[in-house]
Amino acid sequence: MNSREPNRNQKIDARRRSAFGRVERLPPLFVAAYMALVGIGVLFAVLVAAYVSTRLRSGIPTGLYALPRYFSLSTIVLLVSSYTIAQAPRLYAADDLATLRRCLGATLLLGCIFAGLQVLGWRELMANGVSFQGGSSRSSGQFLYLISGLHVAHLLGGMLFMLMLLLRVAHAERDAVRSLVFIRNPYYGRQLRLLGTYWHFIDVLWVALFGVFLFMY
Image (cartoon, rainbow, N blue to C red; front, side, top):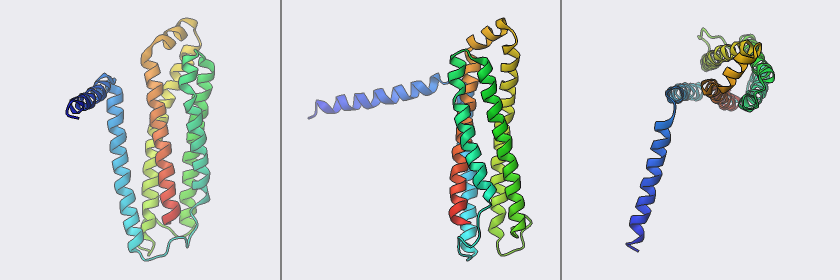
């Protein structure tokens, strides 16, 4: 029994060293991005906690009002965009820059549609008497504007990065030499993977926020 214990400890230490080794081998760009995602997650967790607390203290029963239908439509749009951006690494590996350009363009368009639907959702909130200025018994509704607005702001950041990559792909696609350099440069492949990770994170974040809004509004 005692002879097995050192072997078990050695295996645990080996796993720890392997995990730390994988972290150390991560490119600095990915480390910074993952730290930023953790920070974003903490920010929204605090805001959601404040929203739920304010909503419960208001004493107004949940389910009295319908969540803006545009929020539901925007959720579907964002899920579709997550599928389209997921194709980017495969297209890059297949040297298919033309389809990659269309993939990024479609995802960018879906992101714009999502942002537009969010604006329409805010207008619907105003029409239902939920004002961002406060002063009403439904003051917790202000968090809907704040949380969804911050989410759109983070989405726009990803869209700017996507637009930059889209322009690079379009530029490389016009010339065979530039296309070969683009495909063989691992830096661009890492950027595509990083963009996909960020976009999926923003997607999952919105689905979680939408679920909270759906049950607490």
